[in-house]
Image 1: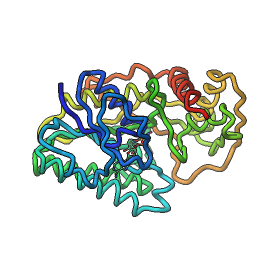
Image 2: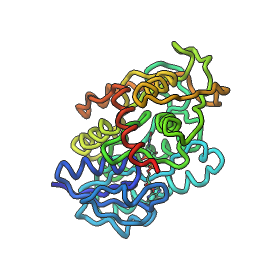
Image 3: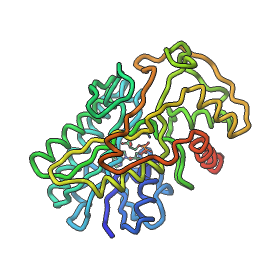
Image 4: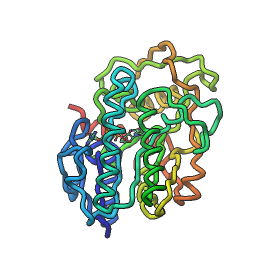
Length: 319
Ligand SMILES: NC(=O)c1ccc[n+]([C@@H]2O[C@H](COP(=O)([O-])OP(=O)(O)OC[C@H]3O[C@@H](n4cnc5c(N)ncnc54)[C@H](O)[C@@H]3O)[C@@H](O)[C@H]2O)c1
């Protein structure tokens, strides 16, 4: 049994990973300021500290085996209008966390990085060697953190894995996605199915893709959680390992909407809107490194299963 600090464990991905760690028999402390997370989202059996990563030095001690770091501001649009918040919370907050880890002698880290570090790719499958050219302050702040972590590994022997998530989706039982404002496609389409939103906007249907709409790589949150457990096992002193997490295949916006229609049996009116600046036609991961280094293979990549789990969660939280 190991003891883990999970920053952001009251949020969507952090709560699912915390649940998996507890099921594997580990001890979990969640550090979360509940800015976008929910106290009731923290799995039973975990200890919740309502605090900020900026104050991590108060909470970390040598009894922790590792930190899993999910806490961040992660709204792309907000990062464009309020970039300072992203440098402050994501970069400043992580710097404080890394310093606190060094002070407490906690030498292992798994970090939630993102496909947004790559920006607008010109190639098909994105590998970890692809050019990183983020197109917004959110992606830039996450890339800056990846660089900070790399330096910490070289200078101070940290063992670290950055997991670059593509589009996380689905739910794990009672743990699911509840962002406010919601910007992710599947929960937005489910809001239409629930009557909370009149229609879904399709931003551009003239892309060079089979049906003209953007293609994205959707990864089930439970598959993602398994990758974190593997990352904790393989993290090596002095190494910063970066792994993309995706399925290696994509679904178009229209395919997602059609799947929601089938799963929910509801009407989903759609409106075609202009393209959004900075939206690449296709964003799909090569998960080869995750496969080779983490021994990770996603098992829930089927879109109907992802949407069904998200729908069951959304219905349960519909008020
Ligand atoms: N959801 C996705 O599709 C996706 C994709 C790529 C990367 N990510 C990354 O994964 C991580 C988790 O994403 P999510 O969708 O679960 O987001 P979320 O907003 O649901 O969870 C983030 C959590 O961090 C907490 N938090 C924020 N700032 C904090 C601070 N200073 N101190 C303590 N707690 C703080 C929030 O209260 C929240 O509970 C984020 O780092 C995000 O950038 C998510």
